[in-house]
Image (cartoon, rainbow, N blue to C red; front, side, top):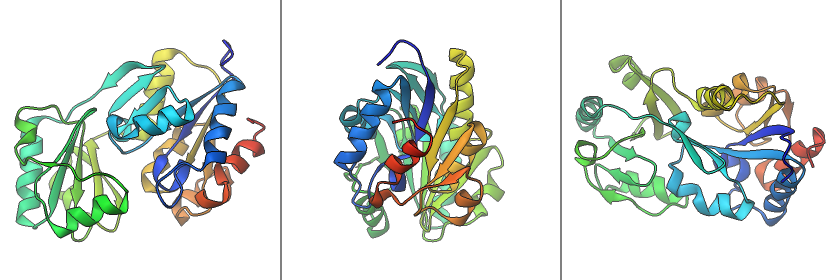
Amino acid sequence: MADKINSLVFFDLDGTLLSSNSTVLPEVSAAVRSLKANGNIPIVCTGRAAFEVREIMAECEIDSLIATNGQYVEFNGQVKFNRTIPSLLCHQVLTYANSRDDIIGFYNYDQIAISEDQPLSRHFYQNIASSFPQVAPDFYQTNPVNQILVIAHCADQQYSDHFPELNFMITGPNSIDTVLKGNSKGKGISDLIKSEDLHVPTYAFGDGNNDLSMFEAVDYGIAMGNGNDAIKNSATYVTDTNDKLGIIKGLQKYNLI
């Protein structure tokens, strides 16, 4: 990559950089490598934990990462931010989830643990083509937690009403990403730009509700054709779907490759 940074380009993973079968299409990984060779910095920006995305980053030659919805940030391989949720809050959310028969996942940069092995949790991890985590409901007592995942029978606003100190982002019919209030993918982007004093054009690709904050934090928001109405309505440009090379077409639109 050239020494001069021309732009920062942030990529959501599921439904965006990844195809419907949760892999990076060969043409897309080649495009991201070309993007980097042109002096731009590609950055993964995901709700997933850092360790879950290392293979994808290596495949695309990406060295920078915003993980667990802005709670954990790396730039050029160096950790810049690592925000955690207090154990008392983790305990309170777990207790409330148990009362609803929901399941909790605890995420940090190198591990995931869930509270129960149930068909609902099995189905969730199968859907995102991820290996099933360890079952350890007391994980938060001895390990840092960057993000809580609520695997709910019905993802609704009840959690937000009970825990105003947390930010609950509904990412699917059965999933709610949970971080500290005020944190998000967009906050991770803003903090990274400020900490590294980067004054270059910024772009973001996304498809869902937890990508809305990304679009607020960058100059150009590119929504995937498979994205929901909210993300499309907030976008600067709507590209093709994740399965029809929408990433490549979006990068070409802005002459980044």
